[in-house]
Length: 146
Image (cartoon, rainbow, N blue to C red):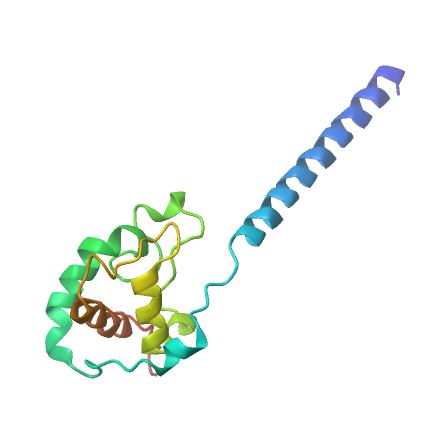
C-alpha cells in the first residue's frame, strides 16, 4: 500500500468519525430540547363536563380536521402535512400514551399549548375544547378481534 493511500484512509476515517459525532450530538441535543410534555398533576382533577356526549362529535371532528389535522393528521396519528417540519413532533392522539392521559390533562395541554403548538384557550371556547377532547377519545387505536 502506498503512503498516500494510508493518509487518505486515515483522513477519510477521521472525517466519518467526525460526522458520526456531529450527528450523535445533534440527536441528543434534539432530545434534550424536547422533554416530555406533562400537564400539572392538578389538571387530572379537572372533569370533562361533556364526557360521553357523542352528540358533539360531528362538530368536534370538523374542528379537529380544520385546526389539528394539519399537524396531527386527520386520524390523529401525528402525521399531518405540516408534521415533518416540526420539533417536537406532533403527538399521536391514537396512541396508548395519549389515550391514557386524563381528560383534564389533555384539556390543559390544548388550552396552554407548547411550541410549536399554540394554546387554544383564547381561540376556542371551553365547550369547543372539551368537544375536541371527546373527539380525540374516538381516535384510540383498536385491535382487530379474531
